Image (tube, rainbow, N blue to C red):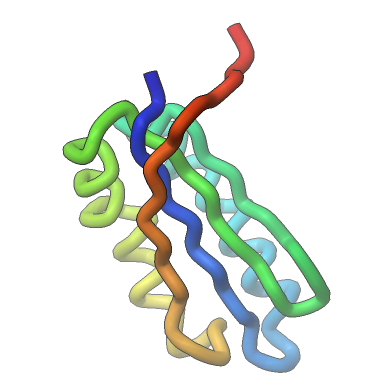
Length: 100
């Protein structure tokens, strides 16, 4: 059962919206390699506002993700792509409906 989640809000620097979208799309390959990350979404919520929603079975999975390759890649690319540091919210999942 999914119990923990993260929501990361990202604001692109002016002119970096397309690069940030491509970076997030490429993140899917890394997310698919993370056994402890069963749910991962890259989102665009406005012209320059993006987000990542991911969910985990437990706190250990969430912590593994926060210390994993996606977080490292985001940290390395943030100064170039983001207008401000990412806003990371830790979320407790009260219920979830997932396919299959």
